Image (tube, rainbow, N blue to C red; front, side, top):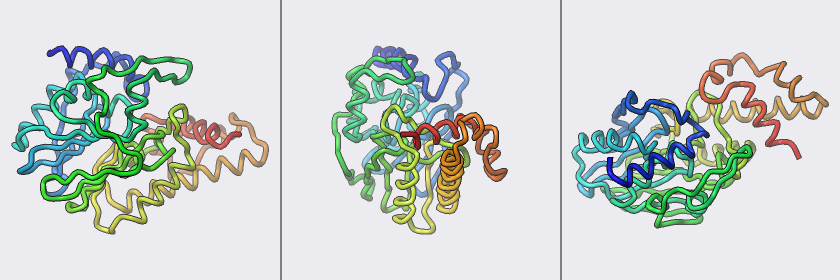
Length: 295
């Protein structure tokens, strides 16, 4: 392991409390490659899904999982035969999407929303726990406030910021020529999402953002979620409906004077039962909505 990987491993273990246990045995993780469409691929396994553009200009990746997986990610990319890594796009700052930054950052420029750099380069506090900044090698070197485009492998790859959804630094990545979109953690396919309220996230903001994305997408778009399988526009619409309906249920019960314990006790509609089998249980999702709606 090179020195950048060593630094990144330490950083990953400090920051990984959001979406993975620091005790996880990464040696057992398999990085699987799926063709999304044409020259666009998805790498899955533990951590956030990686989007990949492979072509004559080289390789561009969207997110880079955890640092201990860097060698496996590199091997998967080499297997696609696309040459050198040229760009890294971060959809947000969480370590299961940016943990590999200090490893890959010295090889290719990292691009992200301004708030991603701010959070990666400063101490972060969540639930009373403070984590240190990521090593400088992992900070984005190109930042934007609203949008940025990379013209690469024959298409415009556009990163568009959607504020106060999953976090305050979320970007959705549009592979405009391929008709593919990487949603980052704005979209957890078939499961309740993690909304990081301590990092500028907001349940109603996320719902609004997903609606705005849906309005921009053609019916035959292919979607890479932050977590979960390759999805369709109908899948994203179902996810949006879940956000709307579960939020309204909690809102109405709060308006009726019910306590959080009572709201959790009544649960959610049976349709959403399987959605609580992921990282966020139904109880935790209700807690997140309740906190987000509370004054």
